[in-house]
Structure formats: structure tokens, C-alpha cells
Length: 229
Image (cartoon, rainbow, N blue to C red):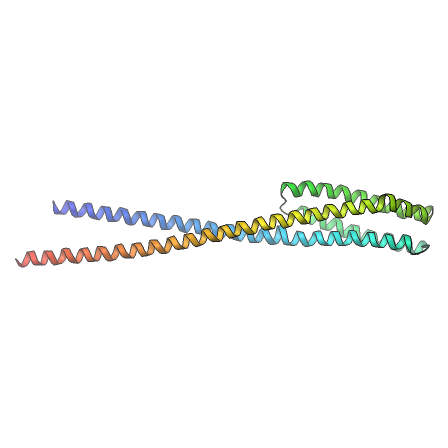
């Protein structure tokens, strides 16, 4: 009877210890998953938000630079062929840089709203480049006044709309970045919770071990007294 009771108690303890071990392993798995998610979030913050935001700034900088150069070209007097050739060369460099930055931006992770705005930006850029070329061509083949007229009626607005699309993409970048930060904060909180649970389980195991040792000592003392009697 005593042997059966002892075995039953040992089975309960073994089952309890196994449950604690399983919980510890599960918590460890969840903690590793949380750390991995945090790492992915930080990598995404850098690769898909910080760097693309910088690229968007460079794109807007070059769009504005082209607008400024074209404005200076049209209103700084009567440009000669050398000025036109230099302007074309500079615009080709700017357009090449913008194209490279756009291709780089397209390779990053984009949310649905970004994809829509990016598609519109590409259309705006094509229109903007075509307008700039027409303004320069009119100024070269006809008169500077014709170039100014086209620039004032179409060019300025096209450039403004293109910059507006870049600004909208920057706004989305900021919004998604804030969401990533909030997600990271949530993962940090979960990681702290997992650590607390692990400590609690370690303390529980310690208490259980001490209890088992104490119970064993009591049983041993009782057996010794029984044997003496």
C-alpha cells in the first residue's frame, strides 16, 4: 500500500515537473521567435524605410534642382547654344540619377498605398521630363519667349505635381516607420513577459525541489524512528 502511494506521489511530481519543462521550452521558443521578429523589424526599418526615405529626398532634391536650373536658364537673359548644350547635359545626368534611385526604391518592401503612389510618381516623372525637353527645344528652335510661355503654363505645375507625389511617398514612409516602431515596442513587452515567466518557473522548480527534499527527510526520520522502535 505504501509502495503504491509512493509511486503515485512520484508520478504526480514527475508529471508536474514535465509540465514545467514543457512550459519552459514553449516560453523559450516564443522568446526566440519574438527576438527574431524584432531583428526583422529593425532590419526592415533600415532597409525598407530609412534608406528609401533618403533616396526619396535625393529624388526630390534633383527634381527641384532641375526646376531651378530651367528657371534660371529661361529668365537669365538670352541663352546661347552653349548654354542649351550644358543644360541638356546636366538634365541627362539628373534624369539618370533619378531613374537609378527609382529602380532602387522599387526593390524595397512597399505597402499597397506606396505601390499606388509610386506608379503615379513614375507617370509624373515621364510627363515632367517630356515637358522639360519641350521647353528647352522651343527655346532653342523658336524663341526664349515660347519656352517661357510653355514653362509657365505647363512646366511649373508639372514639376509641382511631381514633387507632391514624392512628398506623399515620404509621408507614407514616416507612417509605416511609426507602425514598425509600435510593433517593436509590443515585441519588447512580450519578450519581457517571457523572461518574467521563465524566472517564475525557475523559482517554482526551486521551491518544488526544496519541498521534495524536505519531504524525503521527514519520511527518512519517521522510518528511522520506526526502526528504532
